[in-house]
Amino acid sequence: MLALIGLLTILTVLLTIVSKRLSPLVALIVLPIIGAMFAGLGQQIPEFLVKGITSIAPVAVMFMFAILFFGIMNDNYVFAPFINAVLKLCANDPRKLFVGVVLITALVHLDGSGASTFLIVIPAVLPVFDAMQIRRRKLAALVAMSAGVNNMLPWGGPTIRAAAALDIPVMELYAPLFPVHLSGFIFVVVIAFWMGVRERVSHTGNATQPEPTSATTLLPHTTDLRWLLNICLIVAVIGCMITGIVPPVIAFLGGAIIALLLNSTSQDAQKTSIEKHAAPVFMMVSILFAAGCFTGILKHSGMLDAMATSGSELLPGALAQNIPLVVALSSMPLSLLFDPDSFYFGIMPVLSGIAVDSGLPATSVAHAALLGQMTTGFPVSPLTPATFLLIGLTNISLADHQRYTLPLLACISFFMTAVALILGLIPA
Image (cartoon, rainbow, N blue to C red):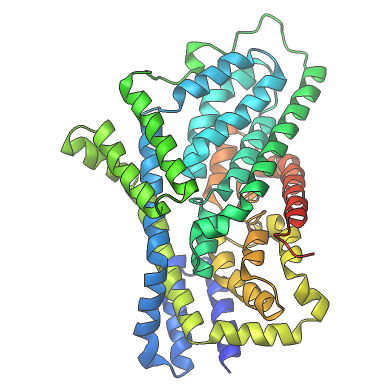
């Protein structure tokens, strides 16, 4: 009975979110409460909610301060000297330019926000592509590849959701995945260079076209003492987080406070800086806490365990044993069907439970999902607003963008899957 109620609850959540009848915030809180009431667990619902919210709190707080921290850095053009240097080094060589775009995107995407990345990178680089008569869909593809792979960062939306859904520390989930992430990014650089070689061969632009180092293509910046302190602060925060000297939430909390004091000297300036990033932070954090309510009810009521047991019994043994591999191979195209909330909070916990019942670690499914589901898949998914911002800024159609970029993103996802198989993160 619990398994059936849990399944119906998850399906209802998925349908209402995908059909846009309910917002994720409402669906993730209200529907599991109704499910628990049908299961006769009404009196225990507050306890389930508190446990779920408590487990999600460190992840939500880390995300909040990470977005504020990197948002402050972008607001103060801390990365502008590196971006401008890459543009100057590219000259009129498509090979250098394409690789440069990938590096710039990776740098800007440290804040984990696809929308802000596209808003910074596209306007800065688009005049160069137009001057060199390079098709804009190639710029969109390069930015999508780099932003997609680097959406696997431990403070990125998919990784945060996966850690929250499994109730494990985010660095514990991400650390084994780092070599896969790094190899995926190197593969993106290789693809960018290959695209540049092909573009150079076919390029027929006018030799007298303007250099891409025109002042209109460069971002404003000053390399003063405050800029140097900001760079040191970024290195210190990321270094503390990766080495585990302090928990990630403390690293970003401290980093955000220091960044505010360093870059906003007055109370009004600090308030303005916080308010600028308040809307996206609130939306994501509220969804994370709603997801805590969702997983708290499903987990502590026994629904997830019941569904996992039933699923492992119904699925053929060979399929159950290879669920991580199936998820990895289908993770990128699943971005076209499921938004990140419905997948990571609705589908992945059930698949992880089935994997555990089959003798596999729950994290193997999360690692598999992160190889494509709203990582490499998010810049082409019609379910993410950032995709429409990307094609809007480059002025290309969604169909043209998907036809050109989807095969490239699929290759990257399959390559990372192969690396994950070799490293044993995905059981073969």
